[in-house]
Amino acid sequence: MPSRLLRHALAPVCTRLDTLAGRILALLIGMSFLLVLGAGLILQDERKERFEERNLAYLLDEVTTLVWLLQDASSDQRALIIARFSRTGDAIGLSDAPRLGLNWPWRHAVEHLIHHKLRSALGIDERAWVRVRVEINGHLAAEPSAKGELPVDKRTLGENIRTDDVKAIAICARLHDGRWVNFRTTRIDQPPPWAGKTLQLLGLLLIAVIGTGLLIARKTARSMADLAEAANRFGRGEDPPCLREHGPREVRETIRALNQMQDRLHRHLQDRSRLLAAVSHDLRTPITALRLRAEYIEDTDMRERTLATLGEMEAILSATLSFARDEAADETARSTDLAALVQSLVDDHLDLGGEVVYEGPERLIGRCRPVSLRRALSNLIDNAVKYGGGARVALSEEPSGRVSIRVDDEGSGIPDADLDKVFEPFFRLESSRSRETGGTGLGLSVARTIVHAHGGTLRLSNRREGGLCALIRLAE
Image (cartoon, rainbow, N blue to C red; front, side, top):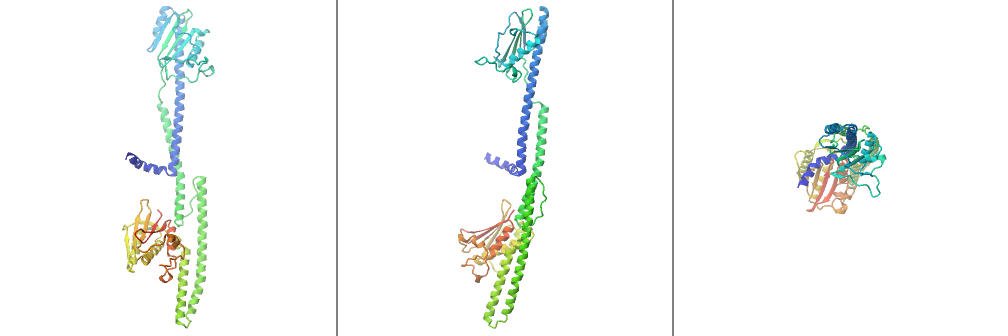
């Protein structure tokens, strides 16, 4: 249950991320976040190193100043100096022997670094007169390797200095009179956390990158959305204007190719329409001449049969030209009340004596070519009434936004092997669609052509309870 609620809550986000703009924005946000995080870690690490260097330099200055002041001071003055230098966390004292033994080779690079800098600052040449010990987590630093090698050589003494685990530093330095200064401090300041200004600057940088990425993503996606919309309209048979070439180079090239394809197909359709008009004119003229000559045939029976054949030829010619001309492409699509359109068709067939029932809403607005769609539906309802004894027309809107129109009848159906063949021009099922019952075998072909021009689909299927189902699904 919680996972289902989570999926339901994240569904709008996933839908937006599935777009081109969403994916580009998600990529930019992810990359920007990683870059800002990496830059922040680098800055914090650099800041930590600088702090540790300052911390160590402060310690060296304090010890160097203490030793120089104690060098030539009297006993009373030394006690006063030690008292002035002692602070919380420090332990300072004088003794005849050092409290630290010899500890080289060094256990830690910090010990070597402090020893080297103290000897240079105090001008002590003897290595044994300055001794350093670093305590890590309450223990002495790790021992050197089995070969006695230093953890860090002289060339990298200043590298990898970390005070996170250093708990105390003890230093012993020999004075000129042979006495030893023993200094131990636990005042190891840890590096401060993230700086507020640094975080603010990184946050502003991330917001700026995301804002810029959002503008770029939306601008890029807008050109792709325009291209998709133009392609959908063109696929539905509409004649959209040429798109303005904008966006990235690849998108501009795609838009240019779509405009060129649309222009070439438009010219092809115009040439085909002019050719069909010429063929129609050339064929109707001899048919009219034959009809006039048939009137002079003295045999009445022969004259009637000849005129009937000529009428059938003219009907076939008109249907063929209408199918080939694809009149649906010539009509402009517009918003239409599909419920009113279907109900008017049902009423027309009821007036003609057909058994037709409508199921659906009282009002449903959709974009279509009403004249051509009416013709396609009329062909389907005619077939259902003529060969199925009646029709039930159901109009509905699917959750996806597509409109479906279902025409059911209670006839004998169509063999499964012929469900696709009946859409072929002039194909007829001789058992039920003979020439005597009317029809030229173009009704379903014309209907499917019109539906395809709307960007939809038309499928036939046999119902389990008997009869045929014709399902139209129009594009969104």
